[in-house]
Length: 401
Ligand SMILES: [Zn+2]
Image 1 (cartoon, rainbow, N blue to C red):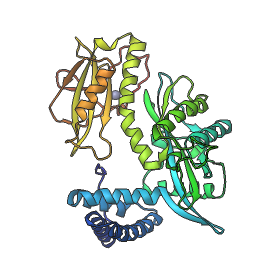
Image 2: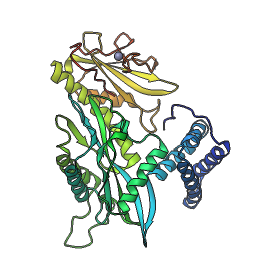
Image 3: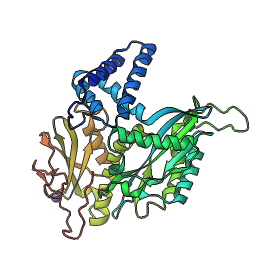
Image 4: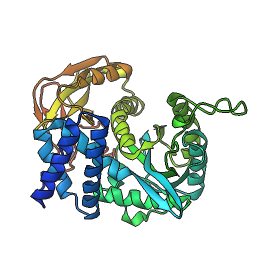
């Protein structure tokens, strides 16, 4: 897992110490029953922190564990994520399991990618498709009426938890959608390729399945095919969900990913957005400049802050040095410098038809353009430069993640 970038001042050393102790205890536990002991104590302490409306202590624990106890660090991240995205709620005499889920969409466009409020008819169509193809029968669920860009997702742990709480409450109350005030949304950066998220919550009677892939084998002859593999479910969702979303994504290519628990869906989207944006870039250069993939060269280099943070890939014509375009391939989840990311990048380039690649071994520092903030990309000479799209002055500054 990656270390959070900015170290925060500790608010309460005593609380940080106690949280670290519980996470380390969980990581070293020797049995399921001991796991449960540590987990329940850790969850109670994390909830208390989320209620303070401040992430400082949680972040201080992550900082401390990252260096001292990598396994404790992973356990602590999972415990925070669980406390944020799922819970058990009681309404009247009924008790529900509740989960905030995300529906990620990978998309690219030469024009603009939509974000913000979503029309009621689209939400209704999406609800129908989610109910038919993804969610278990008999669950109650709610969707936020908003298409979130990554900049518009809640920042930090307690704000994410606050949104989850609103969604859970609405789902348990049997609401169909949750209104998001568009004025409270951050501005969205403009990129050629990006991710969008629909967010919602599902509530089921305690212990019942939430997703179709959790449902038991068909019990009766009248519904012989009520259980599907995850792959079949994804396939049906991509087909039918895309029909429901098409009105939103005019002028865009887009691909739906599997709806899942918020953090898991988010990580999945971060992972898959990398090859997706590579394909988008190569398509874009082909369609706008008539540069076919075999005329391109990709220059790949590792970029460091304190640790390896990302690879950057500069695209040039194969006999020229100017970088036409660049993309960032960031590390996700528990990837680090020991992960074999270069072969993923190279095989994606091959899939895109880019045969000429150059791998630079130097350690580059994360550098950005001082004027527009765009990342700088490696050129074949081993320097970092600004990507310069050929039609100067005509093309708006679009930079890929
Ligand atoms: Zn610039």
